[in-house]
Amino acid sequence: MRRAVDTTKKLKLKNPDTKISVLGELIHNSHVICELENLGINTLKELPNQGDGICIIRSHGESEDIFNQVQKSGFEIVDLTCFDVKKVQSKAIDLAKNNYLVIILGKPEHPEVMAICANAKKYAVNPENIYVCKNLESLILLEDKIKNTKKVGVVLQTTQTKEFLKEVVDYLADRCSILTVQNTICPSTTLRQNEAKKLATESDLMVVVGSKKSANTTHLAELLRDITSTIHIENESELENYSDKFINIKSIGITAGASTPDDIIKSVVQKIENIIRKDK
Image 1: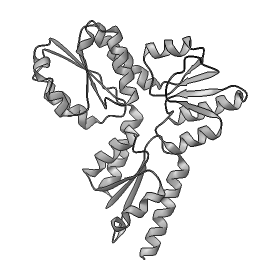
Image 2 (image 1 turned 135 degrees about the horizontal axis):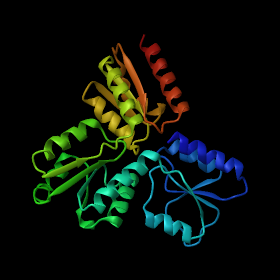
Image 3 (image 1 turned 120 degrees about the vertical axis):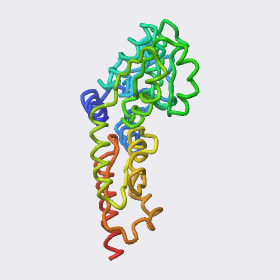
Image 4 (image 1 turned 45 degrees about the vertical axis):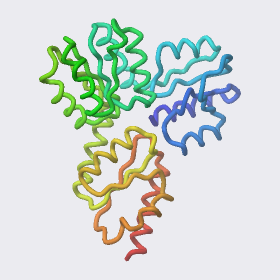
């Protein structure tokens, strides 16, 4: 995600007189979006009939149909779809082409998941056999469909957790004739989660910094709450709402989502240090 932000800024620097827009929020962080707008980089909530300049496809990706619409509207396309996201799309399309019942593990309303689903449906033998499940409960609702289908394939939103994948595999293992599972969790997401979980075992309180709209950040907070007391904040000002959490705390761990800017993390660290000094 930081690659997308850096690339977008460099693109504007190299093309100062060209109108540059991003289709949807480049990343789910309001601080970064404001920074980009101040540089003259616009966020498009919807695609205009007539485009002007460069249109950036964000790291979450888009459907093939959206790419065609952007091109037809007259924009020059710069595709910043994350490599790992493209891999999920490719895996989902392959399963759909081979007549699998495709289960996409992720949040239905998330743009990455919406793009994966749309691309899979476009190439599916049966578009009605593409499903998105955000938790085990939503998967259980498909039990009859799963049992009556010969081949079931699973892919994941890149920011999902290994714990959720294990739950799903355990559930499906005895209910499918043929089960194909593609572990499409982003390696850096897994590494970040593992490091944060280790830190959580050594901490009385974990502070997760990042947007509430960021999938990888919210999943991180969910994981850590099962280990120790955890709060999820977007910036240092929200720490005021949790002043009671810092009373008699011996150890505090701080982690952040992939899209959280370094300056926000530093501000949170500084604020926590000030709170600790006051308590002493």
